[in-house]
Image (tube, rainbow, N blue to C red; front, side, top):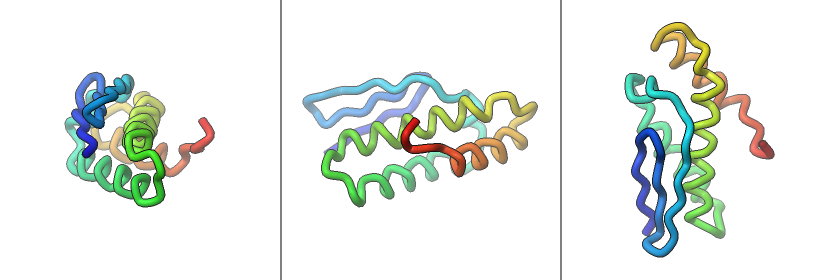
Length: 94
């Protein structure tokens, strides 16, 4: 079982190893569906993963990076759109 807790710093654990993922933007807490989208991204990465912990960590890191790149948006609505754009533009090699 992998457990993940989101906040200013996200913590992901398999019960033996705990990894912290920082970054993101507080406006993710103000965008409807942001948590559900993170769950969908985790599911997508878990589907083909050999290392389940690293897959969940990668999902959180991708999410945080996209939110950081969307941060210059002026308001919550434009942030939501910019965030989706940034998710679509993430290069997995980053």
